[in-house]
Length: 371
Image (cartoon, rainbow, N blue to C red; front, side, top):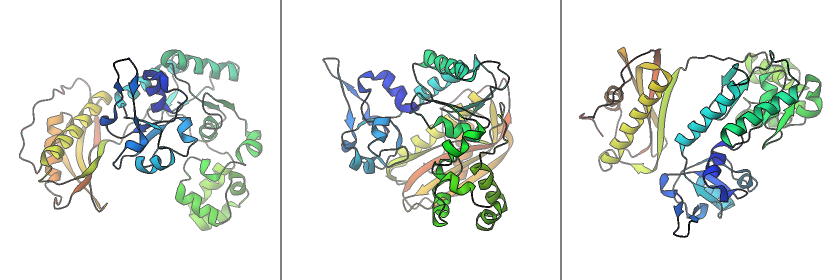
């Protein structure tokens, strides 16, 4: 999906189309409707805090503002960009809509998150471009949103191809297109080559995918190890034998939040308690929606000095109720020092057990916990 979160917001605020818009921060940045029916929006220059960009429109990206960037840093690049708070309920709704639309054409779908899927089209006897355009049309009719599609022999190339012509793109690649379409691209365009790996490759004089493909596998193995070196050689040459996986079991479900300011366990007990309870309830809701119980509940704290700690507890039976998760997470909380201010708080459910027909009624919470 193209700039998915931002595009969903533009459905609600169509007057912002064509403008630099950033999604991120807290709900205090909600647009305010004026008496004349127009809206007043917050601007990046008005933001104070340490929130990060969730996504941005292509107009904002042209100004150097991208997802993951700190909002205050991005304000230096695009102070007049409009700032909207994230609305994940809306994004999940449109995610379900676009995936359901694709499923009317083919059920062979691998879910890769809220805004991305892989599709196996090998069993559909239809001309490639016509079929891909039919998918794009189905998505637009269901959501009012555009998507970009890469149609190639494997998942590696499709991932790259889907990014070559955004927004509203359609890229078809064959293996013989690799030298002209793939090799000139930066090595970091390969999904799995992150900033550190790209930096290490650059230090070796390897900047493009083509330069990486020209390096003997044996040399890459000496620099990156047997597994990673062999993988780098394969992917640079467009080789990927992974299948589209239509069913998979999640290993864990987690929720976390970074506070706008560091909170103290005693002085900010009410705020921390509310956030902690909210995270537990959201994890419980996620478990219910996905049809799982959890036997291991864990917490994560990051202090003001960026030091992080985790604790978990394994239970004799699976649980899914928010109150039970809150109680188990509270036991973990008792095992961590609370003498520093807290920057981030998270709750995690793992050791998942698939279930059906369980009552997840949420009850009020009464517990003597640190917060």
